[in-house]
Structures are given as structure tokens and as C-alpha cells.
Length: 160
Image (cartoon, rainbow, N blue to C red; front, side, top):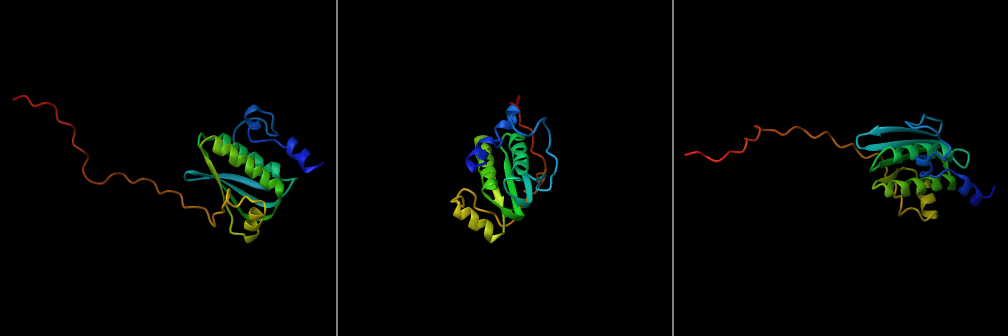
């Protein structure tokens, strides 16, 4: 199968909403050997591991699609720090998911401390689109309750 033919037959993030993709039903996607999804503060983190190629990219795409479709303004972090191999099939999945997230008012960012991932992104001319973060950003701390006395109620007109 040529890369173009595979690209045309691969499920796209927008296919999940219409049910034409490889995933059926709704709800969270089950963990698989290549991806798992979790929430950390305001972020949806998709942890990717192993070798991401034509055989495994669709399993990562399922998690990305579910994360994009699960939020009005998705803020996705794709953690690639445990990836041993990543090829153009994985890049295609990331590009589609990033475009879908952006279309919903959200964003997709990569987390990777691996020089080879930076080289791959630079070679594919995607480094500007996906500048990798070296680590997961800290989740915003909960907003503390206001300190001090509660505000006084507004005064009504005086009756003198």
C-alpha cells in the first residue's frame, strides 16, 4: 500500500463524530500498549510509548480523537518521552489531531526531551507547529478562597 493510499484509508479525527472511523461507541478509550489518556489539572495528557509506525498509529489516533471530541476547547499534551520510534504515520496523526483541536478552539502540544524527536520535527518542517516542551507543565493550583472578612451587602437608600 502506498503512503498516499494509507493516508486516504486512515481514520481522521472528524470521522469519530460520524462513526465512520475505526472506533465505535462513545466514552473513554481503553489503554493499549501504545497510548493511555489521563487528566492532569486542566490538561488531557495522552502518554504515548513504544514504536509508533503504520501498524500502531491508529491506536494513538483513537486516544487523540476521543480527547479532542471530549471537550469544547481541548488542551491536549501528547507525552512522547517514552517513544522508542516515531515515523511519518505518527506525524500524520498528530497533525490531524492538532488541526481538529484548533478547530474546536483548543490546542495540542508535544512533550519530549529526546533530541531525535526534535530532529524529526525539524526534518518534517513541523518544529514551528510542535515546539516540544521538555516536561509536563505544572497543573494550576486550586484557587484559594478569598482571605479577610466577607464583603458588606450594598446599602439601600436611607430613610431620614
